[in-house]
Image (tube, rainbow, N blue to C red; front, side, top):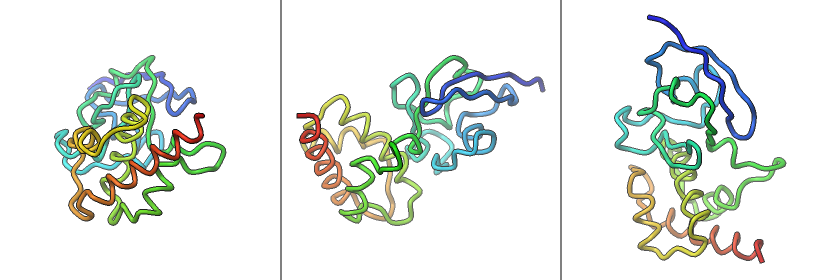
Length: 160
């Protein structure tokens, strides 16, 4: 099996690595780049635990080959922290106890960030729809929805 050289941007930083041509992005992120916030829940794109953004689009990193990300921009949950400060979504997840085991949390945070960037004041229905691809077996979803609503409110205040 031959390998590929990948040159990409991850969380704003240029990154290069070599990997087998059939390696998935989740495995490269975790094993080659050391970004273990990306979690594998199902490996089939059904749970959303491995969600990242690829050129601003939400994707399941278990379904993307690393060779496909050459020259593209990737954002993971680790990139949400700025200057050592938690993103409002991360802070609100803590304050609303919207996480338990933590497997789904990184993917949900990334998906919620994409939602709030596109729609800073989503309804409960819009939040639930945007997060429908992210499965949580521990918390139920009410606390997650409330945390996303609170983060959206906080982010709107800061943008004024």
